[in-house]
Image 1 (cartoon, rainbow, N blue to C red):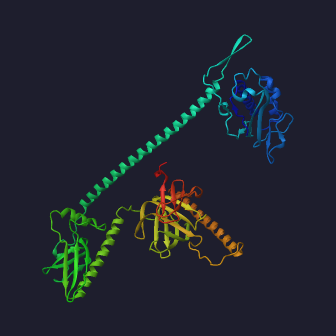
Image 2: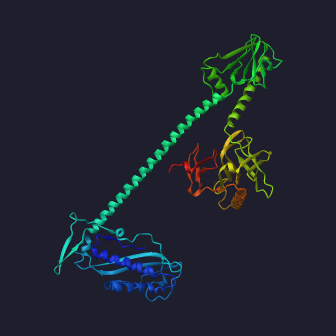
Image 3: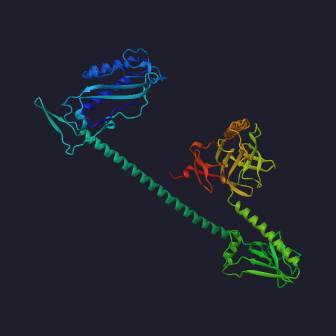
Length: 573
């Protein structure tokens, strides 16, 4: 490309530049598929001879050349003697201009700066163009503007800004010497206005984001308030502890002066003045067995009571009882028992501890499953071949250890069957985002599912389930000795690793396509996204630096645990 830049030009130069732009448009109009290359030069000479014959001697013989294997193709010169034809997808450098244009003293009388010293000047515009098919005009590949306002600059600007009047042959000729200077100032003013507009738009966008954050904080506060109200209403609806309706339901073999543990009713009978009194296990805070003395063994029972902080593992029934009856009833805070036979108190202590452990586990499981959404049952596919992939490792683990097995695609969901015959079902309707990450620079190739509603895996709720296969071991044993640069064994190993990566990527990709076809066949929507590794960046979403990669809908890190998945809709721009 080529552009001529003008510093403090006079009006005559601007008029000549306008003629050059018209000539450029005329030349582009005849550069069509099927036309001869000489038509460009002939059209240019015809246009100048008709409109501006005084510039005909300043027109060059060649108006450009073709671009190919050589920068300047000798057979594709744009002159008046070239009979070759334009063809689609040909690329040319169109160079139009005037050389050695005389500049009369009268034309530069209003000039400023070094323009006063000029007696001749030249103008040139060159663009890279590509010939189109049919009768279309060529595409200009050079994107730089050719407008006068983008190539003219005014430096020596006078302060009065008045027009200069010249007397010639009894007539007054007014030369607008400062009109172009004024246009330069207008461009600067326009540029400043655009910057102010951009700054204003940025401030408006920041104010909009601030308003959105304020609204989201208000909604969050309202949600918390509603949650407290729901919690209080739930506490009010929590049924009271009722281990026994009447004394007739007591066990028949209760000893009168011993601590008795009823596992079925989750209660403990303690003797008070020879009468067994039941206490539900949820009201016992802890049990302590102090050091025995020479003759006796002790057992202390501590109960939940008003006026003391409740722990995090307190069940709602205990909290409800204390809040409801704490102001009007008397609570037992502590009981201490002594026995000369250590065996009985030690057995009672162990049974109470075991019962408390089971009760806490049951309460934690109930609280974990309280907000679970019931999943539909998996319908196995029987009318066609089941897509499956074996030797996969699932995260999170089912039983606390590495879980390997087979993943199958069925009518309404996926089923993972471990080698211990443990099953995990994922319904298509419960999958919010499905991701496939090939093995490029990682040690594993994986399929990841981010769920709408959590499921229980390994006694814990999770929103993310992942299936992967390691290409190489994450921990590599390094030999103490140094290996040669061109060790054939290492080269073979690298080649095998590359082949294995490609094979696993193809297997996982083909499985994803089969799952998409099965889900679409049964009217379910499931599409796999692939993270864009080239657009990834490093960040610390949890505790360590990881590579965060964008997908179509999310920002993800799937190789390190805990997984990081955030939707792009939740990211402020």
